[in-house]
Image 1 (spheres, rainbow, N blue to C red):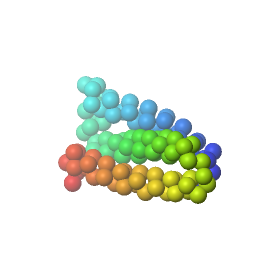
Image 2: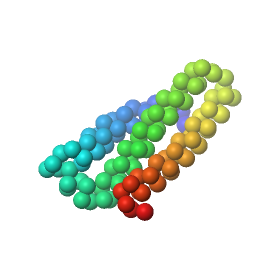
Image 3: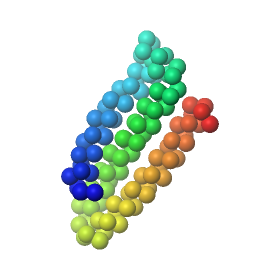
Image 4: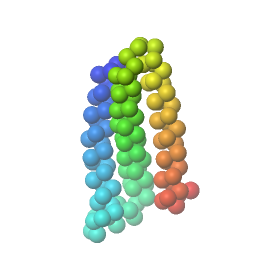
Length: 106
């Protein structure tokens, strides 16, 4: 994937973090809207899954960019990118499992 596409996704995830974070805050702190969101587990779980994915992509892409800046060798760049993808997927799977257990869906 081209670096411009990766950075575009980085900016999109920043917007997703803001939107899904707002929904999460409303669900847990707003007495009128919160119960409507939390009563529907599909909506709440979907929001949390998107929130987790956006946070992890945004964070791991930032770490990837920092590591590539430190080691600008093209060979290492490829290894760093693949390592971050593998670690990111593993972290998402574990985080999703924690969410499912915390919400009582597993």
